[in-house]
Image (tube, rainbow, N blue to C red; front, side, top):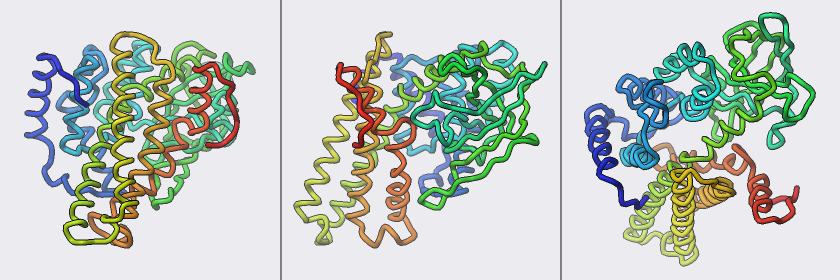
Length: 387
């Protein structure tokens, strides 16, 4: 991202880059998948945590770096530059951590935040249900008041990091009101009454899970914020998911585009027919334009956040542009490589990324939901129709 950074931001870059050069394992330049990838993410999270670098947006008093928006962008740029893996606890640190800092009790923050930073606890998000995905307010998992604790019954699905997590920040129904009857709680997954069943995705990996709750227990001390105020906290949490995180996705996409350009150059040099096809070259140009559009949207969104202004529909636009154009970019890579993308080795990563990208237009708000949000911001009627 082409900002003219302040000297303060550049000084931070120098400091962080120096630490990365000394601590980032050089052998990690080789990409891995599956369980090896999960372990690498967890190990990297622990390394950043020990170095004090794992939570850029958190206030310093809670173990974070307390960085400005500008410094957070520098932080992301440096991690993308070295192709560092996303830490395994990114969901907890980037989304729930900030929510707990704002709404949690001091006892909750004192106990859970350090364990989140050092990856002693791995967190997952218990929001979606079989009949409450895009319509999250329709959730039916119930929490019954039982004196000094709540008893939970229900089911969660499409739970990212569920197979690896031992803690879950979970939305439950505590009253009948659609929006004012939802509460946010901390659920210990390592207990009787909780069954976690991994879901294998199209690439053959199991990052997602179903969580079944049968008389699971949550102490009242693990209610976050006020009872029946979970909808407000859920929106606060999801706003962080829509914020600066898309800048990281934009930078990663630019990096993948450069890799795509290299593939084209190699094939043209070898006289390979896919790369010299005008149709394929046109697709490469379209991928470049998509990268530039996404970068522009992300920069505008970040500028508004830094100024404390309402971002309106920009987060929805960023999600829409990223998810659809990222799928298209990876598709170009697979088309270019052909059968080579199916052979184990460096090129197979393109096929694995392509397969995983199929869900990008669904999770974190479907394409249809994003279009409805954009339509509403323009004063247009929303639609339940397709793409």
